[in-house]
Length: 278
Length: 242
Image (cartoon, rainbow over all chains, first blue to last red; front, side, top):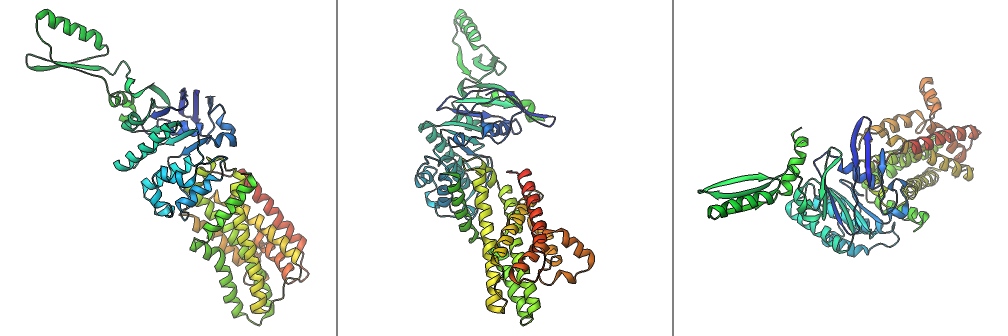
């Protein structure tokens, strides 16, 4: 995807996003509400037309809404209902019919952990169970690529853990996953690579553990005469060298030395600070 | 599966869901029959009234099962994101909608048949004098009111408003179109309104087919057909998935 743009009237929701997702990768789009994440995935899913830029999904332009492309893609939308009087089993079996090589519906229901609710009507499901049904409906076609838009928003911690488990299973099954989230821990937990989106632009991207722009500093701290001294630096190598050299020269030990890498949370807060303070 | 096969699967799925929804089963299906039986009982023996009532309630049945049901259901399906979800699968849009509309059309057909049979068996109204004409007007009525229902769903802002919007059309239309009594008994202004709208002409056509009487079936078909054409254009042109 190159230089993706989307405007609604005068409002530019997406202003030149570019990224590529490798096969088998879990890619996270992380950002505050209104950053343009959902607009971006809905263009990838074929729901919206882009205003500019180049997009290829599994080698095809999603705007074509080609059935052969849709057969290879599974979509979990941010919110979508289903016939309230259908049972979980009926829903999954019905969706399976639209795909050329579906997964076994019963096995798909097991995969998302809805066995006990298989014969319950969808309107009786809890929020977390409904989300798992969303996942089952997206997976029953055995897609190569799965889009998950805010898959755990509104979940309690146990339901989130369960949903994370399913995403890890998808990775084990060698699926490619594109997920959006505004939860840092979710991105850190699940994604191989994260792009932080703010106001329609990518402000940072990379593996979560390597994500750190120069402005978010390493914290180096040590004890000096019983007091903790903390120094922030973008270049810890140089600082550490100087500190240890000086200590050696004085013949002292550098007590309580700690070096802290900026966490994804700090990077994120730093990068999205302005958006949050609006 | 081919598009045709998927449309058939969707149709079967819709049938199963329909009978699980008691309020849909009542308002789309039983209410016209209930009104037929209650009003026909009051007019029992008055053949002129019964010959107005049977085609009238048949027309009402077509209106309720297609226009009202589709306007209402599509509003809910859109609001709850079901349409958007379907849109994200390889299910062809045409197959999905064919299944949905086909289910409403079957309700309309069954409704017309039941009204004619009840009229005949219980109240002695003769069986249709012109069955092919009855089939023609039923199909025309289904196309007309199904497409208008789909088009109308785009005007309804949300599910909460759907009953008010649909009934605001449904109830006045019944009373000016000669469902329960001959439209000729209405004041001229209301008659003029009914004359422009399709239900009165559908009922005129059904009346020609069921009891005969030398009316102008071709003119009635032309008006219903024109509305059907307009309805299809509006339904397709303004269709929204979300």
